[in-house]
Image 1 (cartoon, helix red, strand yellow):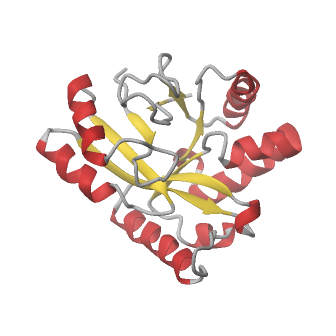
Image 2 (cartoon, rainbow, N blue to C red):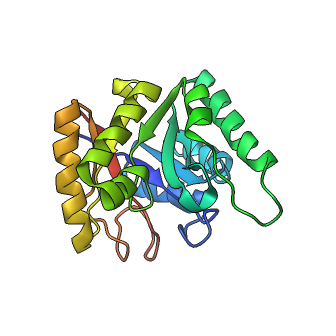
Length: 221
């Protein structure tokens, strides 16, 4: 099974990523990775530059974003959304535009679950990292709340378009979350996205030191 990074952030995600998009593309080429998805927060900021450099190096560029979703910005989680089709790209752009248009100057904003449901066609949803919806559900409501979340996500995106994301950055709190996520993925019959075993915040084979990344690959459950 070939490794593909589906949850990277570029330097356009301030304090969440350190590499410029071109550096990510060159890292893919160096490591002979066939593709990468750059998911900057609440925008497609790094995607155009990554796409141009990736294409010139024979790397496939996947488009997406980490979208803040919740009833209020303070109670929101970041949903990693990947574009699967032209309709998905249009829907993602509409979601981002809606949140930006109602944002006050220098203030954060968030899409609602209802808006995400309205524009879900053509999108694939990962359950995210420590700032994602599954981590929040497990932290504040345990497995029961996580089950309700997965029920909602599968009704919005379809069972084949929701991936339970696993991460292992050598942080103790991630072990509980990963075990719970694996159990939930099996319970719901959902595919999972798992981490590169050697990736951490301090050292990653695809990114330069200091980048914060979530190295994942797509697989069946």
